[in-house]
Length: 260
Image (cartoon, rainbow, N blue to C red; front, top):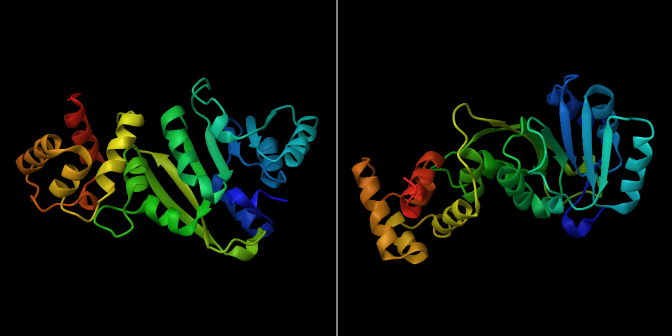
């Protein structure tokens, strides 16, 4: 059985699987990291059409099936284990990342990719619908969140289509979405634990005026530095964290951390 305690639901609907494959637009030179290969339905297609596939699967029985697939496809590297424990920072750049991931650990998986493997080509994930909407949300929207800012700093996110519960086994209690995350042009801004902590702190009270929320999370001195900077840039003193573009949030982090 899938690891329900982690929110894992296996995609079984053939039309949806075909739709995902079409949206991946696989080329012969592509290299993939697949998160949660499950029963291998899409893994097989990746192996037949891409140059190389690293497929990780937590469930031991399903992982054994991946090992058997390796006897058929010599371009498959199966890994039985927790994706969150894998070391990605030693990988060559340019891999495409794909997965039907456990919904309960969506944020940790995305954060791991952004911090440990910033050289990805693109990311395609099946995730919970409301989480997809938060990731793709623009500023000044009620769904704009910590994850929106973190992903949006270096990427564009598109929700490609929604998937009903009936397409999975077992059926989740929520709607799902298939999303594409692609890198923005320009310099990559490094995401480290310091920046993650900063973004979390300002979104902890995202509907309070930024001056007040920063006092609570960063202290009076840092709050004053940030507010003065924003006023100089023409922002209102009543601005809230939920109104700030990811680029501005990054500049504020550099200001507070002394890296400007």
